[in-house]
Image (cartoon, rainbow, N blue to C red; front, side):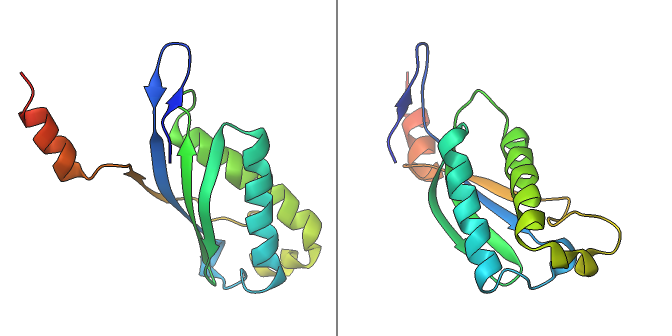
Length: 131
């Protein structure tokens, strides 16, 4: 992962993001899982984030992504969930039976943590040695 440079800042904001299927339904096996992966990668090409790695499990998806400081993490997550939700319902309309009345594929929450090129201990030591 490389640092990005804009007119007034230089940054590398890398995140590990986990999105979970609503009710933990194991629906990401097979074709639907691959469709979701491809959808997220395609979305990244027209959005303000980049997918470094992406992998699915039966009921959740892991994404290693870099984002721009222009938008908050929650805005990026909302963008991903909304766009993929719409694509999923078009791809597999039969899923309506799985989710009662709502057409919501993803659970409300998400997990994220920051990752970078340096460990927290390396940064802590660097800061302590300043001044």
